[in-house]
Image (tube, rainbow, N blue to C red; front, side, top):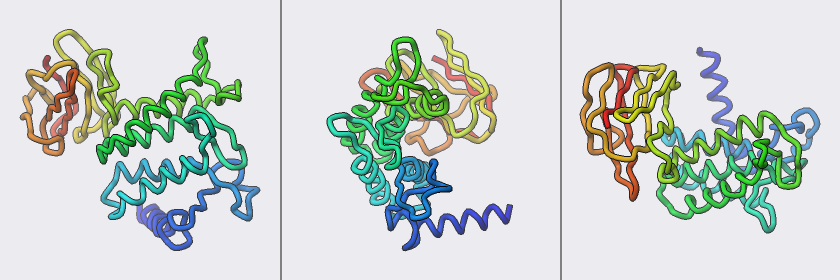
Length: 263
């Protein structure tokens, strides 16, 4: 564990150093350029976007997060933009707009909207997600991009779908088809929906979940015991945020992993 901690500290210190990509903008070494780009000429959008995602999930790690994340988003939207289309290109060595990377950028915009409530990022997320949907053909095949009809399994059926799910987690009002568990800080082992309740099981006893519900629940139980309604989504218990249609249910729990939401 000590070795991992040491390696992480070295990497993190470099990330924010004068020679690191936060300062230099040299986001390279992710794709085929690793063995070939000795001059660090290539740039990619994956590394800055996943750095931004990590910071949004762990905001205490960067006291200047409100400057760092917009910088990363603006870097990607500028360096990898597609003229006339809300799409993001993969890298400078493969300068092609792609569905999974467009959805990646959109998902980070959505998360940043959830963090800041700045409507600009919600609109940005919506527009880029909208374009990304067109990468799914009528037969269900997810193509690489608007000008690239082939498929890459990891991009089209891994990254691409996951980014949409994270976007819905960040902007629950986009979910319009009933009660849905949107995300958890733990692993969801099972979930069941019925007319009277939503029930699910998490891997960890301590975790946080977010759901889009059609109506405020009557009660929430953890391992059979009721937990209290709270005035914010940080305190242990459950918190209801009303939307124009339905609302968002946030649950924080530390005493069990079997959750039942009574409608």
